Length: 224
Image (cartoon, rainbow, N blue to C red; front, side):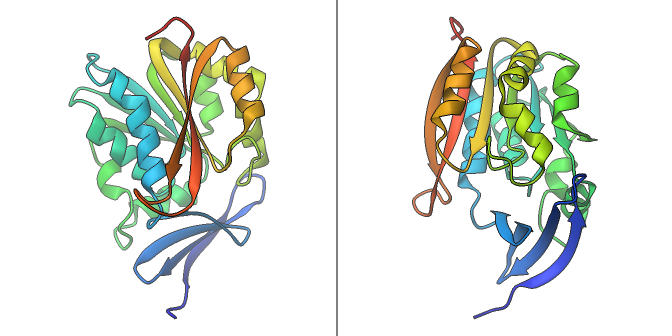
């Protein structure tokens, strides 16, 4: 069995430790010893971008916000789905994650970050949402879901106040999408309390195999 090779480690603002490993050609981020994401298990990250961006791809100069850079797969899928005049804002809280993606020694997100449609912010996505800028799609993949793993502060994004803030930043007919490791019926109810119509979509780690994750894709009630 090929060993895991530790490449780097860094702390999130609340002290949670993220570690980047390479294993048999794959790149993996662990959070306090628990696998958070891997380049081998990326289908659900790509799928959430497709579901959020496809309904708005034909809008002139569509604006999309992605919370969480991860290993770059959500961003790449958004770029593939959207048109050439789209603008994508990416918010990443942990500066080391940005550095890992930009490092030319790792085949991660450097190419996607170099796309002229992308603006990267080293920031908490909650701060960008609170500015109430207008986005056609908002994709939040900052943690494991409402039960935050990476940073305790992420939990506020999934409460009633956080959802209302996200809705206020969404243009009419836009999509608001959340990635979750587990199905969370209480979270789905919270989305509906915000007058959202919610599609609960299951997506696998690989296109046809692997574990299942849950994607919540919401729009304002009455919007198409």
